[in-house]
Structure formats: C-alpha cells, structure tokens
Image 1 (cartoon, rainbow, N blue to C red):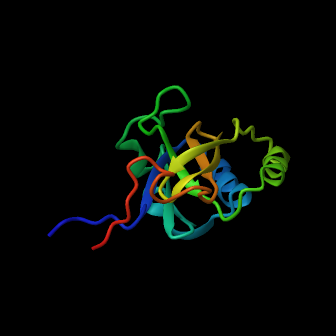
Image 2: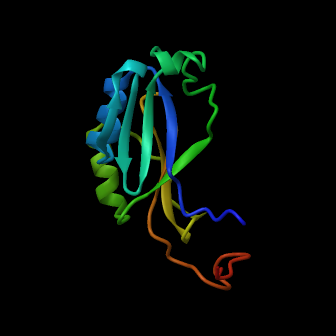
Image 3: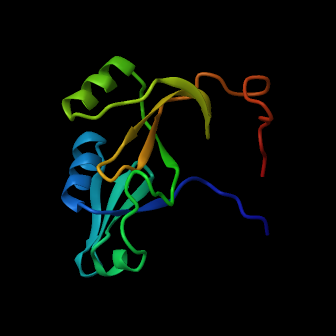
Length: 150
C-alpha cells in the first residue's frame, strides 16, 4: 500500500512566551484554540484543516527539546498557511496594526500551484509564509505538474 499525503495535519512549535504566541496566532492570524493540555504545556490551535501546536519551552513537553530555538537557531525553516484571499494592501495594513513586518510579496510555488505569498515571523522568530490562492496551475504552468489519479 502506498502512502498518499492529503495535507498538513499539524506543526509543533516550541515557544518561549505562550501568551504572546496565542495573541499572534489567534488575534493576528485568526486561529482558535482547539484543545489545551496544561499538564504538559500544550495548546493546540485550529488553522483551517490543520493544527498548530504551541508547546511551552519551559513546560514538561518543551523541556525535552532543550531551549526554544529563537530567530537564529531553528529546527524548522518555515511553514506555509494557505489564506483564503490575498489582498496585499489589506493584509499589510492588518499586520501593521499588530506591528508585524511582511517581506516582499512574490509569486511562489505551493501545494496548489504558483501564487502570491510573503513571509512574516511569529514572536519566537519562526518564519510563516502566508500563501494566497494559485494564479497558475496545470500542465505548462507549474514545472513537472501533472494530475494524479489514485
């Protein structure tokens, strides 16, 4: 039996400041708390169909991995969140209200094809790509793309 990946289930981030991370992911990016396990320092956030797990680096689970990596020492390059629409002006204004700088918007390849995105950082320095809908897809628009049938 071959493995067929359907999508990103969850990503686990070890964080230094859980309240700051909750504010960022919930208030800025619109995630919501799905489940908390206080005994091990875990908060799971709903991000569309996926989860973002925030693990307190000082908690029981977080201590198993050493100190939180911070912006210079990472164990994850970035993760991408597919956002519903990509209105660059509105998104930048929203991020500016929360004192978050966004990198240059560019068309980048992602799971649905090539479309606009830019990068931001969370309070722990983790890089997040905010990915809009694909503007090009299909044969000829994405190198090596071909429909897959099961």
